[in-house]
Each structure stands twice: as structure tokens, then as C-alpha cells.
Length: 565
Image (cartoon, rainbow, N blue to C red; front, side, top):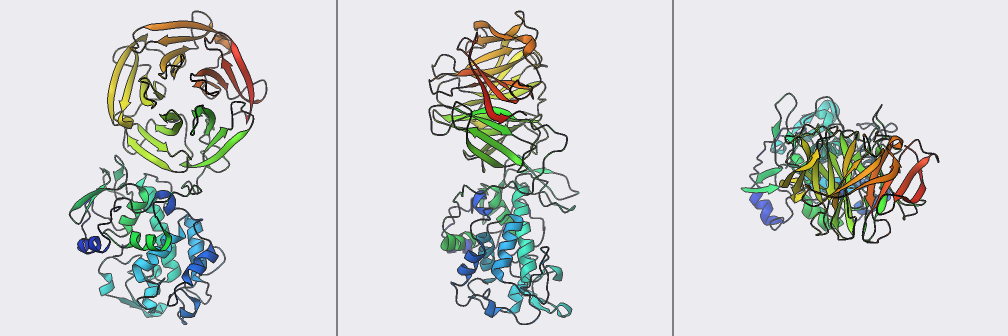
């Protein structure tokens, strides 16, 4: 029931005791989703006092101070400096669990559940023999090793299944197991920056398209499906992948957690997994304004800040209303910082009143494809990961946008190719099923063009609940103005051509300086097109300038509450 440290697990996992566990846990309906990612990493689920109070509920608990071994205690913890080892000092199990929970950003309830699953130390139902402390979390105890217990008399360690005596002892067990669980969760999502020790294994057994490999071995593509007890399961999240990597068969984790702490699939809003992050040196902040909508008929504008943030996570800052003077929400997301040159945040409308934000990765992905990573509405966890049907793209030649062109209230993802197209024209390719298949490939009537001269946007200009595609030309225009060219649905004919009131010479083609965004901030049922200036503004603030419906004059000029970028 235990897992050896960084032991490679075959892509197909088979457990001899699977049937027994299935019967015991009544088929474990959630075997593919044992615990939510957010709950798994919710380090604030219990503080030290609450952990101690929970342990005290069990009169025979091996974690009560009176039950600690009296010799060189394997429960010892040496302070300060977070040094975990045997020694003469003792500290409470609650403090060790709390410290490890905070250090690795792991729910202390996960640690308590694992202690019970492995050695029943919380309840004390199996007794409190010293060897149980030495192998408290089952770390470095492969299946079957409990039948050949080892002695390390020089260390005062007897009858332990731990193969490396340096991993024996309560504090060491909690420390190393907590690291392992979080390491495997991060690797399940392809995060190579978390917890690296120079000799890492890359587990990709959660999300379709990610790789699975051992260091020095070829990468293998893996779809997140494992076979246990003769049945196949597609793992729903990284936390579940981590638990199966740790114990590669059905086990009692979910049953114990549910009995003690309630639904393991709960989603605490305070939990997120961007920890120990770092800002990218020499990379611009890359702030972008995107529309967002939460149970409302109108959009709010959100500043996406992917780098150079105070939290060292990608951040989102949403204005409270159309005045853009007060903030409604500030969020440090679950995403590490990233370079907006190779990734883009887009807004994806799920219905008439709600939208989600998606991080689009253009290249350098684990799958070798364009990938969509979609946040929950609070931007604290992922709701979907998709390796799309498109290969990697050059963001200087192509981009991904969203639009609702059929009026069903939901956006579709579109790939717009501006240059080096097979047709020699601007091409628009529409995805269905969230990026898993194509429903449209259209060569437009406009010749290919540099993205430094123009871009395609989507907006509902007439209130018919359908977005129109608009080619916004801001370089080499015949009028000397920023121009708006509106297509019909076929993308073969023009509905109108408008030379705006804004001079072409005033438009800086550097996307770090300005951008054109469509949003319905007032809830009037159709979009307004805004000119967003991120820097080099007269006010020294991020500015948002709104056009009238025909884009021939201004309707608003706002120096927002945000500084420039």
C-alpha cells in the first residue's frame, strides 16, 4: 500500500488487492477524481490548534504527546530553520504537520488522512509501536516491504519498512511525503519548475497530451488513462494523479477523508497552486485588458498581468464598473508568471451572463500543440486543459481570438492566420468542442497582411447577439486613419468600411503600448469598441477611449485607476 520514493510506475497500473478495495469502498464512484486540486493544496484548511484538537478526539491516538516514544524520538523536529531530523528535542505532531502543510502548500487534512491510511497513527487503532512512527507516511516503503522489516540500531531505528534510514522518523516522513505529493501534482500538469532536485521524474499522467518520462529516457505521450483492477479510468486532476503515483492501487484515502473532513471535492475559494513562483527576468509585464462577465448582462474590464507582479503569480485586476475608477476584485491566480509573447489570455463567454478566461499557449507546450488552459470564474484553479488540433504557431504570424458567430450565447475559439497562409489570404479557422476539432476553415477575401499593419477582432455591432469579424487596419491605410472593415458571416464580402477619427500616425503598432478591445460595459446589448493605451499616455495612467457605434468619433475618454504598463 506504500510507494517507494520516485519509483517509476508503469503506464498501466495493476493492483492485486483492487477488488477488495472496490468492495470495501463500494466501487469508489469517484476513483478518477479522489480529491479536487483546490482542496488538495488548501493549506489553510486547519491551523496548528485545529490539528491538535482533531488529534485529541482520538483517546488512543499515537500522536498524543503521552504516547510519544521515550527514547531518541522519531517524532522529533529541530528548530529553527525548518530542519527535520532525529534529536533530543521534541515538538508536537500538530506543529510538524502544520509546518509541512505551510512549507509545501498541502492541505493538512491530506497529511492526517495519509498518516491514518498508512499506519493508523491518528486513531491508534493498530497500536503505537515505534516502527509505525518510523514509517509514518509509508514513504520509501514499497509494497511488500512491511513483510521484511529492517533494523538500524546505530540510529535507534528498529523494525521499519523504510529502505533508506535517512527517510525514517515521523518528521522526516511527513516532510518527504508532503514534498512528494505536491511534486507529483505539479508534474501531472507539466510544471517542471516546482520542487526540482536535479534528478527529477516527469509524470504527465493527468492531462491529455502531456508527456510521461523518467530522466534520461525518451518522452512518451500519455492520455491520462490508467487501468486498475481490470477497469480503465481517466484521471480528472493532478491531485488524483499524485495520490495514485504515491499509492498505485485503490486505497482507503477517499473513504477516510470523507468520514473525517467531508467532501474532498469541495473547492475552497482561498486555495490556489501558484507558490514559490518567480517573475521572469528581462520580460515585460505584458498587461492586457480583456472583457469579463460574472452573472451579469454587462461586461467588466479586467487587466491581465502575466509577469512582474507582487505575488510572483499571474494576476487579474477587475474594475467594479464602467467608470474604471474603482477596483472590484484583485486575484493572484493559480498560474505561474508567463511571457505574453508566447501566451495570450482571451475571454470565453459561456452564456449570456458569464465568461471564463483562457490562457492560450502558442508554442513550447508539453503536447507540442497549441494548448488552452481555462480558469474557473474565480481564476484560482483550472477547469479545463486542452491540447488542440493545431500545431505550434508563430505569434508574429497568427493569433487566437474568441467570438460567438452563431448567436447561441457561447463563444467559439478561432485561429486567425495573417501571413504564410496556403491561400495567400487572411484565414480564419474555427474550433468546436473547446479546441478538440475543427468546424470551419475559411480563406477570407483579404490578402495576407503583417500583424503590424492590422488585426482581426470580433464584436456584436448591431445587437443581434452574433459577433461580426472586423479587420482593424492601423498601418499603411489609404485614409491615413485607423480603419474598420466589417465582414459578413461568409468572410467573403464587406458590410462596411469606416475610416475612424484617429490618425494612423498616432497608433503605435507595439502591442505593449496599445490595443483595440470590444466590450459591452453598459449592458445595452451590443459592443462598444475601445482604444486601450497601456503606456506613453498624457495622464500617466492606463487609458481607455471609447468610440461611437460607427467608430467615427469618441464617446468617452477615461484615465483609469490603473497605472501605466
